[in-house]
Length: 226
Ligand code: AP5
Image (cartoon, rainbow, N blue to C red; front, side, top):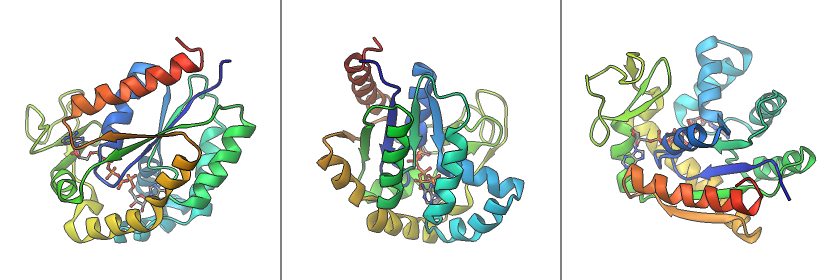
């Protein structure tokens, strides 16, 4: 039986959710939906949501569930879900996960495929403090492990590379604490549903990508998309 597909990339800040979600989206045609990117866009556009979210994100805390769910529901109403979704950084709390279950069921999706990108905390600090992102196309670099050819400039579109305001060490500490407190329990929630896969995300980008491709292809075969 053929279902619309939903993949959920779980994992701590800096695990590589965005890097990998972009790759899978390019290969599969699924829409990449990052709540962090959506919130940062709202902040830079100065919308009501952006004004509420900005100080919370700058402290490294989580934006309230109701605001995030409203944003998600508006996004999912857009007509580009034919090939399915990759959720990156969402859900992040138990109430978000429960509400997403209801949304997916009523929109005709099968059970989500959930991948936990697992990395020890000591590696994450290096990844986050070394991250630079293209201000035009969103391509993600790392000055230590994945530098651009020309410092400060995106290889793909020549855009200026910028650092995120919440990648300062003291904010990263709070983001990791928020992850441990609110998001890590979701691995148990999805484990109980029998939909959780764990990938060793301490490996290099291509190895993680290969492990994810296998999971995606297995799910596609199961759902009759291949
Ligand atoms: P969000 O933008 O989602 O940030 P995050 O979860 O903290 O994750 P990151 O984007 O920092 O990391 P990533 O896992 O995507 O890693 P990346 O691929 O960039 O959220 C930001 C804020 O928004 C939150 O703090 C919260 O306030 C709010 N928010 C968002 N969603 C919310 C929600 N649902 N509910 C409530 N609040 C919400 O990689 C990181 C670096 O590592 C890069 O430099 C990359 O090049 C490098 N790298 C990646 N993979 C590898 C590898 N395998 N080996 C070596 N380096 C690697």
